[in-house]
Image 1: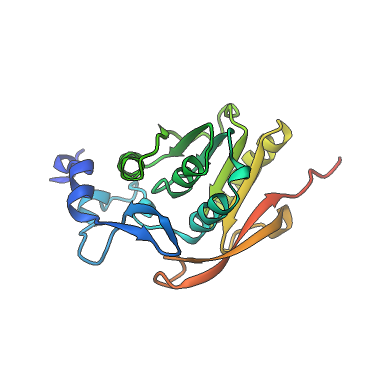
Image 2 (image 1 turned 90 degrees about the vertical axis):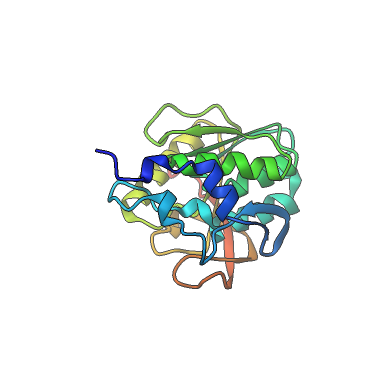
Length: 223
């Protein structure tokens, strides 16, 4: 059953009208449509239990630290195929494209995020291939580098993500994770390679700056 009025909201028109474009805090190279107190985001996001939270409407610390890292170290992505898992606003994907990636794909399960990524990519003048799917249980993606920002906020999701990252690593795909050390980040699985101050909208900090980390997977333990 359709919820009254929800199906009539056009995501692209809503985002353009209600989420103003602004520079990402501490990442002035990138502009995003970002929600504010008066955005009325619930009209687009929905209120049903099955509706995913509108994480795409804000730049979160895990994505922000990866974006900052890639922009500061463009050799990480130069000429490579990059896949942004759980892309949200597209912040990391946009940073990868700006840093010179050969091709960038952004993946998210939220249809509104897919629309937002397209709009944000256009604002920043970059081309991103956008995919609406849950690929964690699927065949491994054809990519050189997998970037994952802020996907360790839920225990069951964290377990699925780590298993997927291990499969990717075993297949020769490089993995980078950005996270402000949220509760379910399995730190024993990762090695910190960089730290950057970025703004965060998670854990009740309301956009304050935090020291977030960029992590690589630890070496696969031998059986």
